[in-house]
Image (tube, rainbow, N blue to C red; front, side):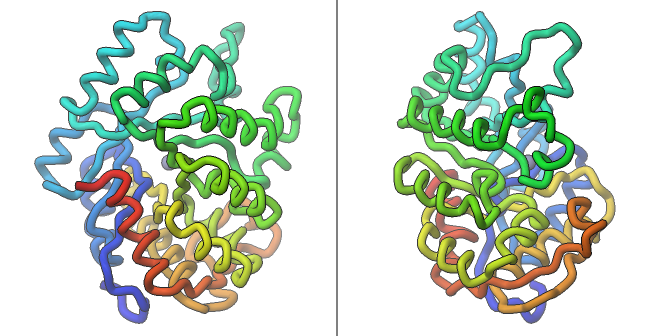
Length: 311
Ligand SMILES: [Zn+2]
């Protein structure tokens, strides 16, 4: 365990990805130094049995569903795919709805409809029937919308993407959603809306994935962020969004350390230990700690994830 960090209990990383076995070994080893004992691991190819063998009891596996799969007109196929998820070792579904999809659609192909579209009802209905919770990426940082998605005719607005997701929360009220990256709303101006969504939809949870996004935005007013996280601590899950692809230990260390400093300590102005592309030309990102209480930390680090995914 790293020295000088106040919390000494276990952590459950509720948002991580696996791409490569050697990188996964490095991610797990580095995670252990920071107290990470379990993790939700998103797989983009079927490796769950191999990883389960290598790390027994450590992972809950999420299966990645691509947009086109969701739009299938073969109800039996998709039903079988969801019905056999547990057998294949998966207990969670991962989906990605974000403006960057627009750039990946081949010329002339139909755009992927918004997440609340009726065409997705069957898919979400099946997940609900089989009680498979969803980790879902609904939108990106405000900084992206101000730059690479500034053409809202092409990419839509962040408000519309959050609004579409809200309609899905309402349409699929019996399905539990973990909206990645603080529901895409760690920006201070968005916290009130996120709080309203928590109050309205008991099926909504969020994770804290992307250390730099959380540190950059929540650290702008640690006192207010502390009050928010404390109030909604039953709905927030610690997550790093680390992708086990890099073979550089510093990549993992930087993310784990940043989040632990952010949640646990009262540090001020600590430079982010890696480059934040969104602020590198405007002075950089600095960590200002929220100094959360031990009972709140225990919830977001461990108990909430166990309640949602654990056995
Ligand atoms: Zn992710």
